[in-house]
Length: 434
Image (cartoon, rainbow, N blue to C red; front, top):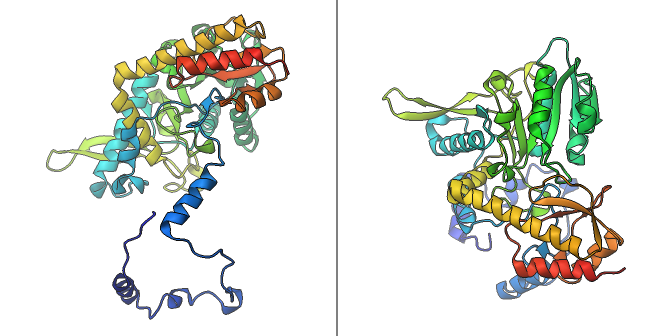
């Protein structure tokens, strides 16, 4: 807060309530030998106007998506965030939102979480969703752990190798200490694999490189072999792509950052987790349910919460403790204000923009295809120049370029990019010869 309206009288009243004679008295429990005996090494005091100007000059040294057109994705995307979101989540009752342990005084928070769960179910086609996970990577890892424990004689997990590499690392860490075998393979290898001992198969939708596989073929093969199907999805893409429910998904997980959250240097983000009802009681985190009170009025409660804060640690489904309540609220507001029609328009704009840039880059003659598969708003091309040097060049002209991967240059294009920005990006990328 820039301004704290506390007077000397207020301070004296607070000290009186604390039964303290002075502010120093509040720190009397700190041993004398560890206290700082000199003033802090701070520069001379500035006026409010001088201080704000100074802090703004420091902040101006950072690059941000307000000053640069961002074509970098790989799990965090520069979508437009409606201004109503920051207005609502900044309200005091929401800003400090945490687990509503006392439902009788937390009906507003529980209502918001219930609406979030409902929207995630509608988006994924699943029967139930929780509230919520730390991020997309931990959501995927939890789904793998549940799948592995769902069978008596199966425990292995297969992840298609086009999964986000950091997600794969997270899953490997989770499974390593549960003695669960984890294998990475291509879709072609998967469709030829013996799944007799495989509990769960994970596929990213679209893949880390942007490819959209024929999920019906994969889903049919997985289900025919009796394994569980885990889909790690981009939530915005689900506005246009076939619903995971239609091709037999048992779990749909992913990163909720595109739903109204800033890129924010990597967080805080939101992991969404949804599944069919058969696995509801193994779901980590907690589920808000709708019921009626003694007077017959609508009421909301924490229905299921099989986690280690409520169950003995060794019997808990998961050690997930915090629900990302504020981030879940952000996603709820975003989906509410965009609506079904608006959300689909956002997704379609992403597709149109991405294909415009893709075709433009190929026409320059400086880039080659890496795949003929369909894509949503992210794709990979192979430049004929050094990618790191290309990104540096683009950065000097106001663009945050794509990610260098083992397959090529991974580009993301959202609905925020204007035609002028895309045309200039294509022109600058095509003219670079370094």
